[in-house]
Length: 171
Image (cartoon, rainbow, N blue to C red):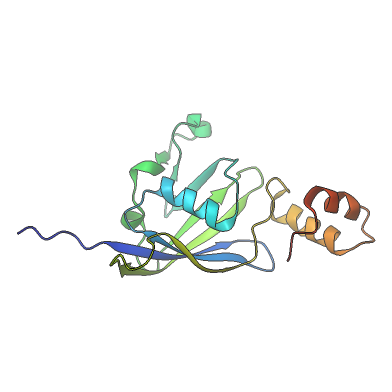
């Protein structure tokens, strides 16, 4: 008989760079998902709203959604055409950039590649800390400023920031 390839899952640690304290998630995803689906998984896991352009950087290659007129980048490869398992093995790293204006960079580390037996959900957030910053707050620098203003009632922007974001942001 023909042996079927064993199904595997990737365990990924996704860390939002340049933000203190760290915002991170430990996520399990099927090795056979394309990067376009991994994009959706990371968005939900981190708490983003998928309102902006994004791209993946793997080694020297850059992947993204091909239909955004490629924002002038002829070297952009189709993220839907490449599988996670084909570009990332154990101990390898990918970079996921979201909102190229604000510049949120995520480091995606492959913690493990494990056989999958169906006894647990193939996609799951296993662990993590802190919620992602709000959309459109100006990137890491703007977020730091926002947290400072929320934390300091004497800050001239404190009332405005609380009105805009509530006091739901916990550092």
